[in-house]
Image 1: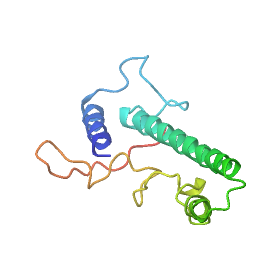
Image 2: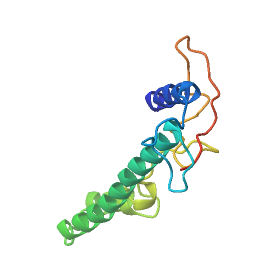
Image 3: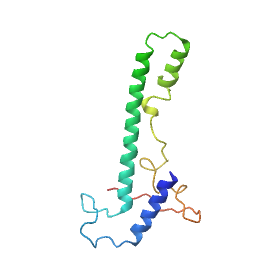
Image 4: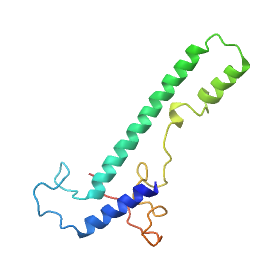
Length: 134
């Protein structure tokens, strides 16, 4: 996560120094606002991480179906224990558990603007806050 926050810090510095609005081909939101590389990075990283979670959740469903199908007639205690540990109510491979960690008060993944992870080159924390939404 720290690398993502370093990218965010670099984009923050770019946004502070770049004179937005001088070129017509600069990226904009659909409403015409939001000229910020940080906002675009936030949009991209949130979508990318969201797709990873979706694929992991689909994998969990397919994995349970494949395991159940392969061991349908297996009465061994080990197979039954594995089914419960992996796919039971608190299983480690159920769709609800296929989520990336969340940072409190960050939306949704906290891969940007996180005070504890955003450090300058001297190792000091930099509070740049959350980027705007697109």
